[in-house]
Image (cartoon, rainbow, N blue to C red; front, side):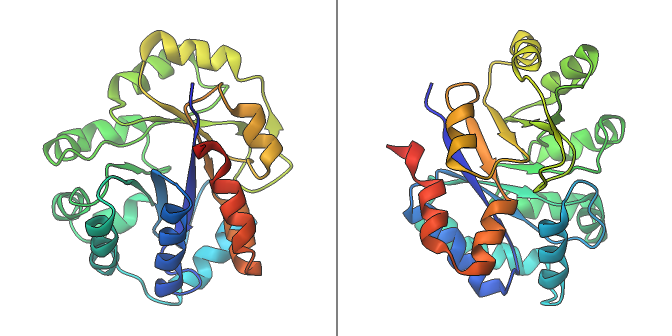
Length: 242
């Protein structure tokens, strides 16, 4: 099994132009899937690094429409790269959910909305389906099998497997044996499973390689970006493309 690395960039952090530059660096390093965060003031799953980055990005007053305009040139130059948006429900509702989802679907293959529970998602399901923008479910090692089955039935791009009980970018979360939850997911879903949360080193990547289809690296990339360690970012993104 070839495991891809799916790097994360936060739109507007530290500036809009620099976040776009980072996305292009990912692509030049071989990334074929990229997660792009749209900043939000009240995240529920983000650790300290992501929270601080969100606050700084919000000072640049990003808008969904600006993001779409800026991303359009990247999609034009690299149409083969799949982009997943990670944001929260409020920014989507603020612009009118039908209009916003329709606009996002022009450039994004899927969307992660951590504060959208399955029950609420079902009330918006027809809108996301109409615009062919799948919502990526987040499954943890402690998610019940019945819930996993429900998420798998809705999954249409990939499943986001949360590898720790905790928040992103910390070392305090409890790492779990992923095999039991992977077995449960595979019972109901044969598409890609991409793991995230708490992945920050080549050793973490190597440990998960072959176990899941992809690995998301977010907080560690933001930390390296803040330090200007772009060679380190390339080293994290590129090893598994060979």
